[in-house]
Image (cartoon, rainbow, N blue to C red; front, side):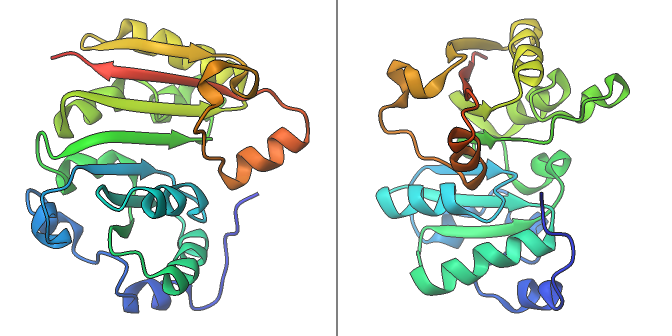
Length: 214
């Protein structure tokens, strides 16, 4: 369960050199912020940052932006980044629906969604990060042929996500599996904190990769 109340977390975020404070001013300028023209990948709902920090360590020629709405979770990622000091990684505390205010068209090469909130009630379906509504938001910022990779242990959410990708006008499903850790796609897989916990519990991890086709 996510931490919700870490004293001083908002102050830590405001003071950290690894967090972007005026994110809307970064739109169209991310290569200037990173100081290079490397591709940019984002993780929406990055939690404590294990996944995206591992990616940043393994891929120094790719820039990463981790997005998290909970201050008390993001502060844990900041603590790790203070130790690692990765030059190709920044964090933003924000809600996912405002992505198009922060990234310009064709500015992002790929998006990772890991163990997103399932929003189980039907009336909240539009809030799911794999809904048609969110796929439309991703279209505004992704490059042509940009990919979204989604992982979850929630089979209902995964079935919904496959349906939404099929219904969305400009997307195609490249691959998917209902049991990642017993599939060909496990090679090179980086586990999140939640994934590690769920695998230890014996839960099957679902994964899909979809591509934008403009």
